[in-house]
Amino acid sequence: MSGSKPLDFLPPKILLRINREQIKKDKLWRVTSRIICSFSFFALFPIIIDVLTKLKNSGFWNYLSLLSTDTGAVAMYWREFSLSLVDALPLFQLTLIFALLLVMFASFRFALKDFKRIGLSANLA
Image 1 (cartoon, one colour):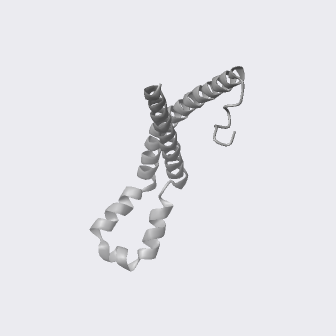
Image 2: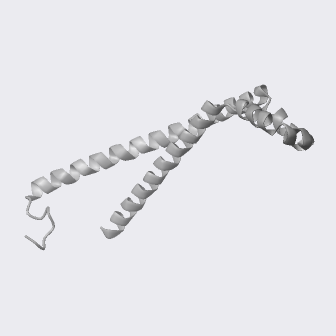
């Protein structure tokens, strides 16, 4: 038994049952990953619109335009300017966008690995 695979000694019925359970688990994972990826993708749009609206209302774009028009004042009052710029950012929504992007790309990566594994196993069969 030293050179054989660990599952070779099991009866065929048990191996079949293990295989079925693994297939069920894989299907559940695929469905869950697709739902998570879709949710994070479609949740991005309202949040991005909200962030753009909040940036407009908070005066963030005005601070950025001040940076390009009056660099002398910005250089003189750089601390106050940078604090005002950070204060105008909707940090919670930006964090939410980055978290959703991370979740979306991670679930997409897992889905690609899964499809690659399925493709390789289909080619081997």
